[in-house]
Length: 87
Image: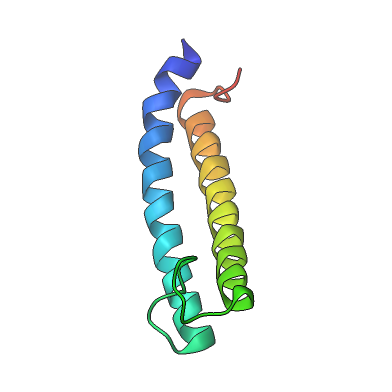
């Protein structure tokens, strides 16, 4: 029952976290390179190095934001219900 209550909350919070990670990556990339958009893998105007660097930075930011959001939502759920989501 505990997981059934937490799952919808977790989905909403994860979606918001994904949006926040996307905005954070855009700001980091813009400040680091001066370009509005990061290179796409299929963009011929960028080198392999640039494309892979952008993907690495994006992945690191998304991973960190996801972990922070998931942990914070689990802690908030525990504070509200007295139970950890996986219990």
